Image (cartoon, rainbow, N blue to C red):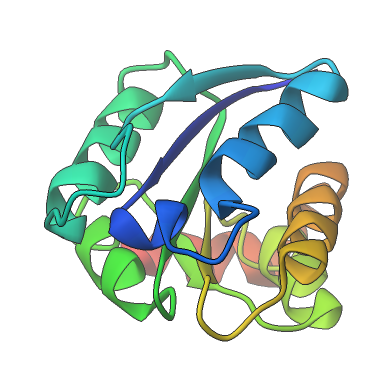
Length: 148
C-alpha cells in the first residue's frame, strides 16, 4: 500500500453530490492506502496553486509516495504542480493515459478534472495509476533525466 497526498480546489466539493474529493479519499482508504489530505476541507472558493503546492511539498519531503490533484479540468493543478523540480504531474482523461504516464514517464502526481470526468472514471484512473509500475527502460530514464 502507498501513502497518497491528495488535494483539490473547491471543485472537490462542487455540487451535485457525491463530492469527489471525500469520495476519492474513502476509496483510497478502503483499499488500505494511507491518505494525507492537503485540503481544502469545504466548498469555499480557494486558489488551486496553494493545494497543488501542498501536495507536491508532501511528496518531495518523502511523506507521501504519490499525489492526486483535482480541479475543474485538471489543467490548473497540473501546471502548478509541474513547477516543482522532481514532480511529474499528468492530466489523465483515459485509462491508457494513466497507465502510460506511470509506465513511461514515472509520473508521481495524477491530475483529474471534476467537470469533465465522472466520479467512477476518476476512481478508475486512480486505480490504474496506483497499480502501474515504471518500466525503468533506458529510453524512459534518459527522457525523465532531461526534465530535471
